[in-house]
Length: 236
Image 1: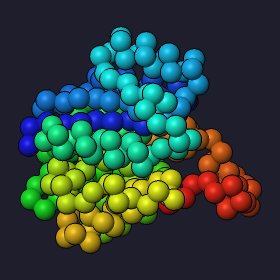
Image 2: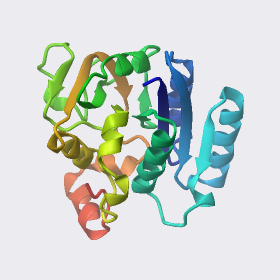
Image 3: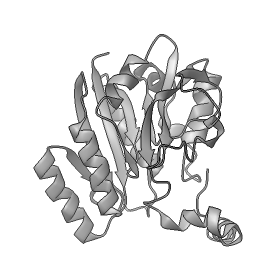
Image 4: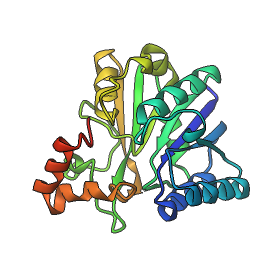
């Protein structure tokens, strides 16, 4: 395997998205790579800013408003489209979400961890102070050693191997859900793949920065769950 397809799904939150994009474009890939930002119905002003940033840095933007009309979030479509691109180019798929800043060697480390029967490889996440944070709070007491795990992985900064992409068709993802990282983690394990968490490559994560209402889960959980169930938000 000699190629990577790196994607970032985006909806507004342009300042943090720019930090993400610049960190990706400054990183070393070590292999042939394409970087695609999926604009999930950002405002027209922010869509133009993404286009300007793409022209400056040399990545590709796909505006979902040009090809579909379903309301955001469109993570299912993004995963399906990206899987098709990755399979066509014989690439691993790396998802870097728009509230993450990667390290200069993150992609080299992710690729280096790929071995026989590995389905997913993720980087652990930390806050600006270096403390492990959501969604890997379960790893706070672990030693900083890369490991095979059976716990769920997040798509904050995660590589899905090409062999795993061949094993499961994302067209089968439940259209009633919004997010799929937990489900896809389970699919990888059910199919007999090993999933890895890189404790030695911690990336900075600002949880839910692109969707601030989700922070209510920690500050006002009653309101969060009321929105979740009455408005059908955040279906995992």
